[in-house]
Image 1 (cartoon, rainbow, N blue to C red):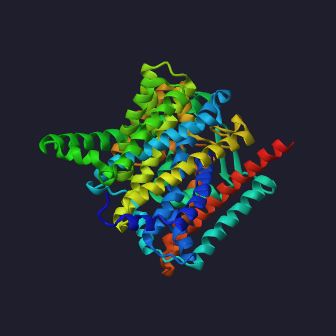
Image 2 (image 1 turned 180 degrees about the vertical axis):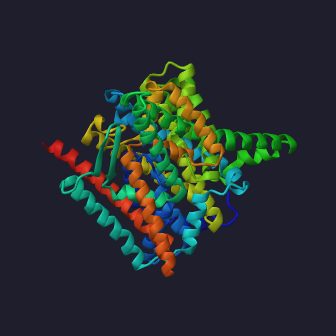
Length: 556
């Protein structure tokens, strides 16, 4: 598979110390990712953060290999995208009042099926989409640069864990002790939740995303809330309730249109070029594309991959009760959508995993009699597979830059992803048990924006014209090179979340200019460390508070 090292070298990169550190980090990062995805309606890539943590912790054990650190961070981060795939789909079941029809076992089957398919698909396409392509994979490239440039030490560790601790204490004071309100600076504007969200985590999301992208996020919020709700109702075009339905439909259409734009602009033209190349080269290119990682694997390892596909198909067929025809369709379309995911992440760093899940959901709904809950399962399986694929392919790019063994990276991904399936399901069940189904949805404790989109597509769209306009607008914005997904997120999310994220981006703007004026070195790295620590600290404490609530209820 890799010409850069022997069997001994890849095993050295996948060291017991690295695996142990990675597994502990995987539990924390996965739990944090579930909470963040539900609470914020977004899931920032954890790769740079985990790269810094892996370097710091490994050096505490006297180990300084960049490749070992890379594999360790892969184990740490793998579960985060599994968490995203579940959090972006499954809570929609609760929003539709169907909580009694889903169990934790079925959620685990969804996560495991998607994980198996994601791992196999990335093994099959690595060579074509990393080694032989010119895709940039901005997240993977940034992680490689971080690993090569970061000089971690005691100061970095204090900065990282100190920010995590402060954010955690803030969360305890706000949520457990009730010393602070959740929303501040509220204004009574009909139909608009105008306030500042008292959340260091939301500020950190804005800080990490930053700049032009958050500007479009805020623009979407202004258009939806003050343009359509306030302006439209004041002009007598509709009442506030109707306006809110239009806004939610428009936001969902924009987000789905963004995903459609990825397919139309990036994926289909690339697929056409590949097909033309195969015809011109006598199918040589196609043979290379099909060989992927598995070209250097043993017969036993290839057989293992085949068994993983069969296991995923059986889980979908029997475990989720979807039948053999739907199972085959889901497996085949999972391969197609993971390629779409790899293309999207490689070009833009964005992985609209729930959109890919929706595409397959709609395809299955068109020819089968699957129930609403089963359609959510289909979307969940595909979203997990695509989320994991985006993460794996970015990691393969990191490894290609710094020389990490692809086999070590893939095995690390498998370890972290399988552990992440268990952790993600456990956290989802814990949050549901602690807060109930009413805590999920627009304007609730867990806004779950993407899951709301899936729920709406399954149950019915409030304003079909608004959705169609958003769908076409999302495609047009993406085609023009503008962040359509973030614009749609701003339209859809409660205004206080968008405003707080914009404040976080403003903090970053001021921070960068102060650092530039004072000639402070590595300012971007320091800012990422602190913001990532804050994001993780509040997420982890939020999960702990929910778990303690569940345990208290059981004890009572």
